[in-house]
Length: 162
Image (cartoon, rainbow, N blue to C red):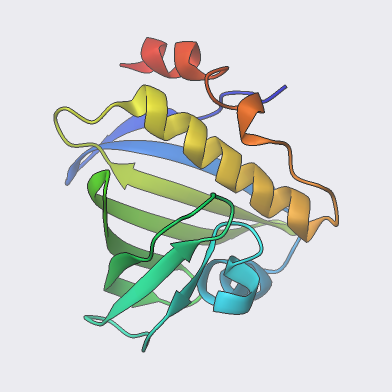
């Protein structure tokens, strides 16, 4: 069964939902898994287009049935430390940031989503837990858990954060 690990944090930009995982890997390797389309598609989705700050690429989620491409604007990119994007999807516009940092022999990867008024973190949080666990499982050669282990199982955990 999935475990809720996300938390809320106030930053200069507002309230963020944070989901963090630790991987036994070099930061450059983890960076490749969050930015290179062939690796990224194994756990969340593939992107097409020309990467670079200010550019728009299309992201197609690969772990979801009948996913349509979503527009992603690259706001900031500081390899191999930080990628900040704006994702425009049917669920709305999301401000996302992925931070990658060394921690001893491991690397911490943190996904942050800026929470706007009206965002339902009880549906958003379980999804990010699912994708971050997919990253860990696939990098480890394991089969990822099904989404049903995360939603609606983690809704209560995320309702308590609000």
